[in-house]
Length: 215
Image 1: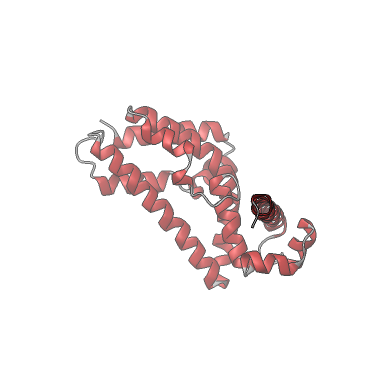
Image 2 (image 1 turned 90 degrees about the vertical axis):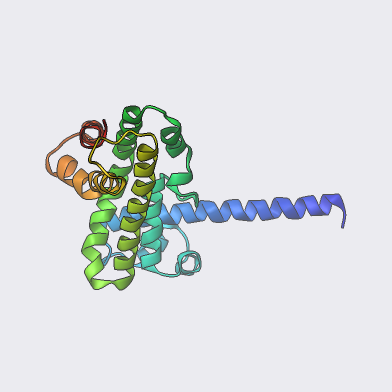
């Protein structure tokens, strides 16, 4: 095989991957809009296909089911895009990990929550409402909560290793406090119900975490 032919095949493969990723992102965004506007139960795959200008078969091939598509929408809300890299492996989390001042770490984390939870909270409410009627969605919701708990366990471990936790606060307690205060439910109460701005909410969460956890 000539170098030119191999190069063309590689280029074509890259082009197909790029188109597939673009289509996936468009489907995820279309599903997000319709799920939030009309609710999960009332939104059909055919509605999402029409909104994204693709066939229903394309959606089923990429996501297998409506509940799996909702899971992809939720992960995109957490990550900020439809890419496959988990939030914990992204640069914004690396910035928090590398910060050596624990108080500053929590300030950065509060700012991150002020970006993520406006995207995530409406979908979390939707999942919570749909879960009793769907084992798949109940499983997705449990996975989301478990992932948050695991991430907060890592964060608590980092604070513990640096000797930043106040006397009497164990690593497990720190994990649970972080998990509770980063919850979409708290965002919903403070921002949606009480009218706080996301920025004010993020600052308050950081302050509450510092007060509860740090020396």
